[in-house]
Image (cartoon, rainbow, N blue to C red; front, side, top):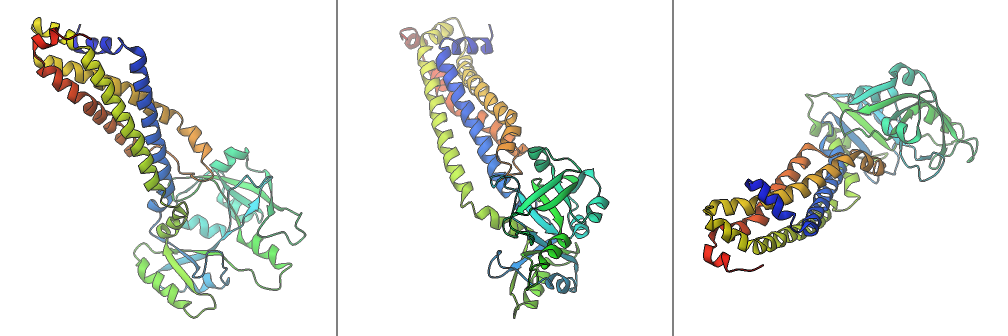
Length: 390
């Protein structure tokens, strides 16, 4: 019987203890992968943001509107390709708990500004040509079982329909998209700015305002210069603005959750530290119980290096099984977790660097847990080991 066989047999001498230790490590690795993936999902929109898109909002607050003339004046700035409204609608579909982003946009400019938008069903022509047409992400289509041609009524919570608060805004799904980058949310509902503006103007004395403006710039243009010129353009009103890169704009939303990465790191680190101590304790107990067996093996001529490899192999085997179960559980539940947190963290996925980190930690834990018992066993004298009792 080789070292691996002996290691497995020794671990199975106390199957309950070995199983509980492996399950503890499984939970730790699962939490590590899941929590870290939530953090990366939270910051994904900012880290993968486009360098050729800028966002303009009121300098007072994102909830303060700007005159509709702003996009046209911004387009006159050198280096700006185009600018268009990006207006949060805040409607309700069936129930207030069905929360998802809804934005009134210029269809043609949206499609040009977001090359990461990949069409799955319908066509750009349908979206552009249908006044009440809506373009929805795959996340929404899957959640609500929407298909091209479906009629979608939204109750205007922030913008009630002019015909009455009980009258819904009617939309028709004309396209379904997926995102090739996390900078675009797959749980978003896009519809025509023209439909939004003209409908509201029916029963309004004041013109419709825009909450945010997306500015698309040339790749060779300095974003810093354009941002400065936009801010200077409206320095004296009628509404002062604040222009940021898309990365900075997306980071604002991540900051609303507080210092999540810090708390996640603390929680994950504490759990991992506790499991490491449990693994070390298990291996120390295993080494002490095997002392007499080690004495017999040494008397039969097994070298000290074999004792070292025996205990270290047991540690790697125990941690490897537990860690592999944890990583497998995290990967197996990835789809379910994504659906569970899709409304808040649509970019949830276990990245390759998270998988690599998990594997590295499994190896390190196995080494840390097994190195002390392995050294003790290799240095143990044959006569002392034979005189020991479990």
